[in-house]
Length: 227
Image (cartoon, rainbow, N blue to C red; front, side, top):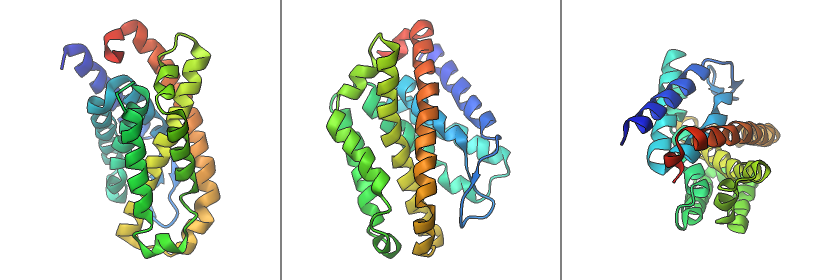
C-alpha cells in the first residue's frame, strides 16, 4: 500500500470519527444508542478506496467515533460501516461480477431476517432490502459504468443507485444484530418501518452528494486510486 493510499485512509477514518460526534437519531428500543448521519460517508469510502481498504477505513472511523462518544452499546453496530462500504465498492468500482457479490451479501442478510421468530412475525419489514436487491439485479454493471462516466449527472445517478442498496444492506445487518442482542417485540419494527424508509432515503441522498464530490476530487488528486 503506497503512501498516498495510507494517507487517504487515515484522513477519511479521522473525518468519520470526528463527524461521528455530531448528533444522531435515537435508536428506538436501545437507550443511549443513535443512528449517526455520518453513515452517509461509508458509500464514498467504498467507492474511492475499494473493497479492501474502504471497509476498514469506515470501520476504524466508526469505532473511534463511538469510543469518543463513550463507547457503550453502539459499538456492537460499528460493523455496519464496513458492510455498507464493501457493498458500495463491489457495485461501483467495476469489479468483475461485483454486483453478484453485492446481491449475494444483501440476499443472505435479508434471508437471515426470517431465521428469527421476530423477523417471521414481521415478514414485510425487509421491503427496502428487496428494493435494494431489485436495483442491483436490474442495473448490474451499469452502476459502475455510470460512476466512471465523465458526465457529472451520470456519475451522480450511478452513485445514487449504488448508495441505496449499500445503506439498506447495513440497515439489515443492524436489524439482525439488534434482534440477536435484545430480542425486541416485533411491534417495534412495525412502528419504525416508516422511519427507516425515510432515514435510508435521506442517507442515500446525502451519500450521493458526498460520494459524487469525493469521486470527482479523487479523480483530480489521486486518479490511480480509482483504477
